[in-house]
Image (cartoon, rainbow, N blue to C red; front, side, top):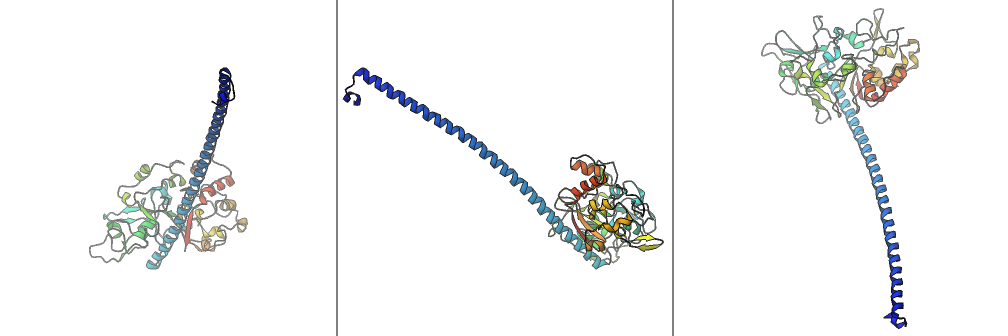
Length: 404
């Protein structure tokens, strides 16, 4: 219509329409190209957004894991403090610290030197439970009267002596191999988990304990008097839980049994006598690892006298000392004054017991260096400083509470 008003002929009209159509097609193609370009940029933007979201998610997960570990470690520290408080409550009630239970084969590593003495002076069988000829059972403990040499460890009088004598050389294996701990003492003497034929009480609680690992009235004629005591710690409120059939497989290579490769739990469990297995009950931390209860005594015998001349004579277990500082001393007595094994911790200087949790990584730092290196996926170092640094890496997250 418009073309005809302009006075154009039919042929001119068709040509004009073709030009308009070509122009419209060009405009459409440009529009489509712009649409395609817009779609391409949107896809790139989408991929970038997905990448950013993934990175943020990874950071959040990592932060959450760290926060969870930190929270659990804090819980383990609080639990260790609660256990130490219960240990003191036990001492106030009965007049002695909870006896240190002999944990059995994992501690002895087949060495008779690491078995405590019985009251009659004979060496006990593997613990933690000893079956008497009369049929009743007792707990095998390190005696505070007979086994002071073991508690002091550096007296120079027994086979458990580590090579830290005056003028001796540093023995890098023996220095960390400290067996003055138990993973069963706390459950036995703070919660009373043993069977009635051992501690005199069915279920939680126990009869009055004796310092030699027996309980008042147990194994004696019916009618013998006994006092009953309720558990000294509420595990539910204190963030601690009891673990049945517990064996410490990581402690095997620590004490040179089976080389540096821990046995399986079933193999380790099988190392105990059938009557001992029901008593393998430990208190575990927030990560499922047993708390260790360490005991030690101060002093070193010199010319028949018990002396404390320097911090080495405090006999502090290596698990409580910064590995780098400890290895730096290397038993150089004239230089020992240059090092503070306690890092200024006056409480540690006076302490004679400790509750220790291995922390998030499950290692105390005293394990065989081959075990630690395997966990950290690194080569086994040979230099003493490098070994100490590696120990420090797994030692630093321990939760510790000491007392005296």
